[in-house]
Image (cartoon, rainbow, N blue to C red; front, side):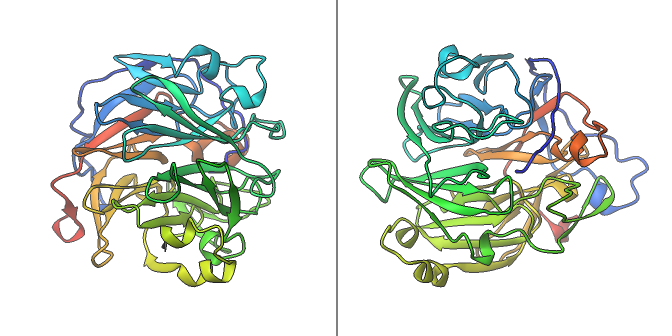
Length: 388
């Protein structure tokens, strides 16, 4: 997600009890009626949260990037009770004089692999500064030992000076140690998918000129009731190319979508992970699954259903692979710019960064209202549109 302005806040996280939602009194539109069950897991008064991952034993990890604010708090933290603990340790997660390739600079998207290990993308960006060599990287950590298992620096030509390495998924079915797929949404206008072989560090940039990775020209969104038109030179909301990214449960397909778009695409991972595949072959392998809602983050459950962060609707929704049906999982006025998303067996977790309310998108006025929330909602039963 392209966030180009500073934001300020103090640090901290506080747990809240489950909340049943807000009053429906005075609601005049079905699109604004609170629906489903929303629980606030934590509220943050410090830097805005982005990435979220939950391990099989319910350890919760949150990323706090520095590309919008050069904060002095942990960029990767574990939420223990009501405390954020730098992860995997202070030396790596807090600012230091260590070289960028030997510390975490700006953790953004996060995920776990099929073995329950934590992976994160370090976008390497500190606001107002060029991305330093070694800063952008793919990070793997084994929660069983709290030790790094991988740190792969992203380099040219896979990495560009205006790259925004935004989110990632890790596929253990291809490559000796697996393959990472990274969404480079771009801080400029040059998005692409980046494929990384974890064992060798080999990497390449693909589909950089394909419509499936590009922001949609003339795109119109409605956020906080305001119609806003895509303008890459003077953005009035977070914009970017390929951003949303998730794997099918069996890792045979990668699903993805540009941020500034409403279309969902996929490609076979057997093709995408093949470093010998040509751009023409990759382009021919892309499937357009049609229109969805505008999304920042997407995530897949064990049934292959894809959860969608629906900023325009203050909602988390769900796409069904059988026929493309969209279901509302939870809707609540507190769901302001849902960002990072993660699905467990029982819940969908999501960070709410309020990124569209940053000063840079609102004439210099900071419209955000801390705290920034980490929420979750049960993933069953579904709430279909025809049941509203």
